[in-house]
Length: 370
Ligand code: ADP
Ligand code: TRP
Image (cartoon, rainbow, N blue to C red):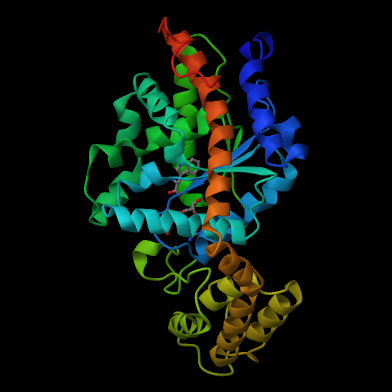
């Protein structure tokens, strides 16, 4: 395929390495090269459309951070701010939430020496790729997207952007030629659409330009909210990752329970307190709650107290780090800028190839990262 035959973009690469070395991150240099082969590569995006909650953490963020060690130099995570324009109209809110997501990820363990972390809007090449891909995508494919219908039903403005949201997401994924995308269950259709689009492009132009990415789901693919529906910032049922003790206490109090009489067994598999507890608790504690429920020895008073306690403790170690980062916005900005440079080198490489493939004859010259 093209990946092996093409010369690597050496000039851009050398320039890039030098810059990174200048920052004292020399150990990264071997991984900075634009990757032009079929290496396993993981990418995911998270929208800055609200404050991140524990559903986002267990469904997505936790595995993002784990994967940085499995695929050092080949993990790409970005803040999907172009996507959030479909729902966030206020500029200050968008800026604040973007900063919040950056702080959360870095506090929770994202390591910029292992993963490339950037703002989507710092890589404007994705919008160009979006357009090109949209020309090989049948409209019917987007007509079948359920998230569009869901969002319109929730009262979100039915803009063209909202409609073509999955196109932009496909471009995010394909522009760095990722092979794996860790997300929660609700994103699986978007990944099917992405594979469809990648396949359409490859066959329309008789190329193997784009790998077809796999969806990576973890065992918390759907975290319930305090009302038992999928936890979502839009349903008023979420618990924020960095909620205060008082907020956690109030939320746990509101967790929906069945009307089981005290002393009667509770089915852990349908119980929301248990579904949440199993994410936070140590396996031994989870067993203890399961057995206590089944034996009728633990009721909601006790289980909610157990839940409150593990929820409060779980993110405690990350809190100090987040406060530290909050006072060091220059560092956070540097991380995002460096991430953008690296992601952009990948994006430029892909887009230059794509421009050539579709027949734009000036492709070599346009904005090349040299
Ligand atoms: P929300 O539903 O609150 O709007 P997003 O759609 O912004 O959340 O989701 C961001 C990421 O978190 C996605 O990868 C999504 O799959 C994951 N996610 C969101 N809510 C949950 C949940 N309740 N359980 C598991 N994963 C979730
Ligand atoms: N649509 C995703 C969500 O709402 C966010 C997202 C945008 C994304 N682009 C992506 C996720 C690319 C994975 C890969 O959660």
